[in-house]
Length: 239
Image (tube, rainbow, N blue to C red; front, side, top):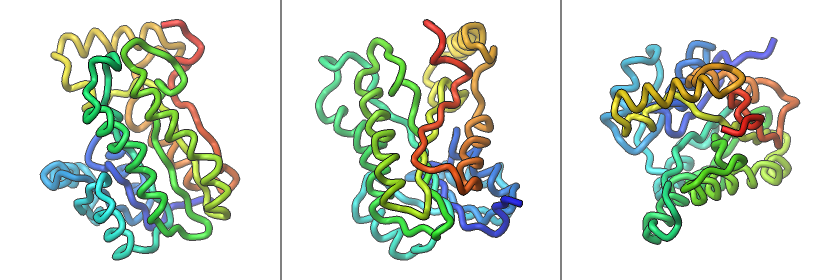
C-alpha cells in the first residue's frame, strides 16, 4: 500500500492556501511535516490548524544564503512541495522593473533555489505548484503567465536529473485562497459565484482539491516529469 507514514515532508509556503491544505492532508496521512515561510507569525497561526507534531521554521526562499543554509542543516527529505503565489498582475508597461523582477524571484527563482539545494530520498519527490495562467491567456497577466510557464518548463528536465526521485508540477485553476482577500467580501463572493457558474465542475477550487493531487504524485512512483492540471475544466471553456 502506498503511504506517507513517517515520511519526512517539507512544505515551502505552508502557512496558508494550497501549502497549508497540503500540510494538513500529509500530516493526517502520517507524515512528519515541516512548514516553512518568511513570516513567523503566519507560521504560528498555521500551526493552530495543523495536527500536533507539525514543525514550523522561517525560510525566505528568495535568499540564496538562507536556502543553502536551510538545506545544509536539513539535508534529507522524502518529499518537498514548493507552493508560492506569483505577483505581477497588470499591463507590462505599468509594472516597474523592480516589481517584475520580484515576481519572478518570489516564485520561479525561489523554486530554482530549492531544486539546486534539496537532497531527496531515492524514492522521494519534488512537487512545484504553478498556475493556469501559464496555459490560458488573460489580459494583464502576461508576467504571471511567464512566471508559471517557466516553473512548468523546469519539470521534465529536472525529472531526468533527479531520477529515480521524481519531479512534477501541479497546475491549479482558480482556488479559494488568501490571494483573493485583497477583494472586498461582496466582490470576492461574486467572483466565486461566476467561477462556479462557468466551470464544468460547477465549483470554486478549494486547497484540499489541489492537496489531493500533490499527495497523489508524492505516493505514486510511476508519475514523474508531469504537469498535472487541476482546474475544474477551465481549459475547455472560453470564460
